[in-house]
Image (cartoon, rainbow, N blue to C red; front, side, top):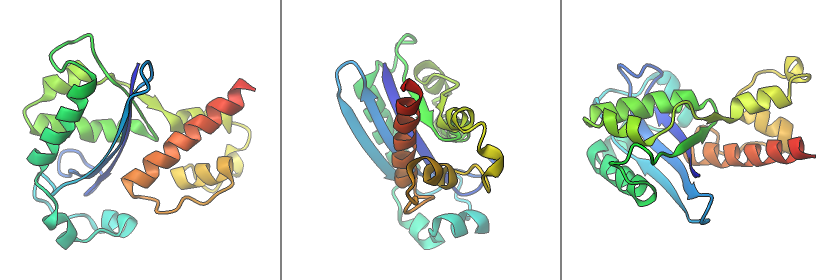
Length: 191
């Protein structure tokens, strides 16, 4: 099985008007143990200005966004990495995405592929839906959820690991925390 741990940071919440500016994660082949990490930053592909809310959460400035590589450069790099693990022309070879609230990330990823005239590539090589660690955590914390202030990644991470999530809303930090959460939940469920 090929797992694609993925997290995005975006200029806002609407896939029709906003775009990815950070795409981070890991891709690994569970059969061979081969794994790669990626942490791409790119200029917004719709040339929009980041929303005030997204800028406040992530701390990124418009000047930083404007200095990042073009989305087409990053798209080429990302699809080349994907092609290292699956034959991009084969409908039988797909990656399984894993993330926290992963449908949000997959919606933006699908929009990005579509923007790059590669909607078929997304459909052919990325399973939908993905494995959502948020839902696994919701099940695991069923009896405690009502006592929690919210169910954001940082809150759940602190609850299950006893540690604060440093650098929250950085896609790489968030996907590292998501991987750690998944391992903690699976480990506790196996006991």
